[in-house]
Image (cartoon, rainbow, N blue to C red; front, side, top):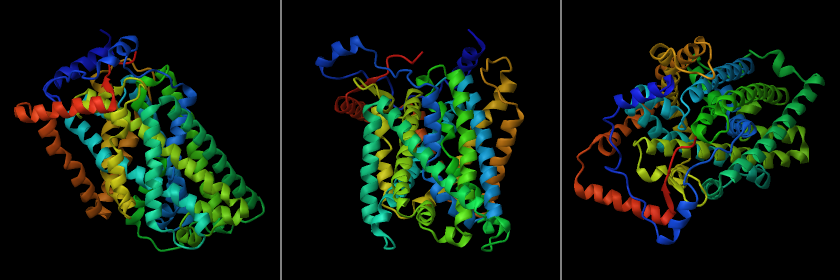
Length: 508
């Protein structure tokens, strides 16, 4: 047994007390006409994502609505163009360091599930469960809602001009958009990958168009906003800086999802690190150039008053061609949602496989070979989020808990270097990088707790609300017979209804 498997085996023994969500494995109960098909094909996910798919996934997931809505939030909480650009650079560097750390984790622990798996293998079931819980009930689902609303708003804006768009129309179209993307991830891994590539190409063209326009005006000498970059456009207290960081980090979010489907990546020890490095260099440099373009064309007060910054920018420089941005931004949002749904479905699937979520979430559609139950699990919560006008506020609430748990995941690196120094690591970052990332993340968390204690406290309460669910459904072994029977019946019904079965074996 090599070092990696021995380390994982020891960890699994140490958490052998963790019980299943349901008491025993549920037998596959489906109609007889499908039995023959089961013997012809394994019910398992397949390795079919190469380097190009990895790059398209990271770029397509990271570049979503953030670059189109976060510039306003960053400027609002910094007060000046210069400070805003410094925040964008800082967030890019911090995100790149975090992404490199996740590349080491993804190649050292070659299992799908992302930070859920890393936290589970190292620190146990409770923090790992809370990571998935917060994503499911608040973080990821709120991001689905925010991004879909942004995409629909950009799509409708040219038709309404200066008039206010009816919010019920935005909600209705956002729901339809989510239905389409959730359905796509339920029926085809291949088409999910193709949509990701198409949307990535569209958003790259869009961002290059914005950058080229900004450079053109800069060469024409329109640099007044940059000459007095650190002159405050609005007065902002320094205590608001963590909120600016959260806005910037929201725009960069998505780099942590690539290792969530390690078992579907071809040659992951090569493609995960390379895909992350290429993607983050491109994203960070592009974000900085896009923000420079915004501030070359628009003064700070125009950015703060703009409902859709990219659309205001494009109408100023492109005239009638601004319609291109109205099409490209929704495509960008589609790619971001598609990538997040694709990855989070795998996280839910792995958490079920590790007995931290209902068994049905770990099953695969017998024909399409997709994690159908896990892919659609977040849909009703995301739709419920759309009923509120304060979705972004929930994202702000959960930023505190999100970065706290991400720092816990990165802490796996120094811990494993100390605990298992001989563990095989195909990709290895300098130890200073995870230390820098953890320190910066904890500083942001601490300052946000100081400057916004009520928001941070609310997010922390949402995270802790998962503890009763963990002890009732995961930890509690001697559940009443009627409860176990009801859970079994529900699982079997869902198997028949969705035509899914447990995975026959893990991908090689």
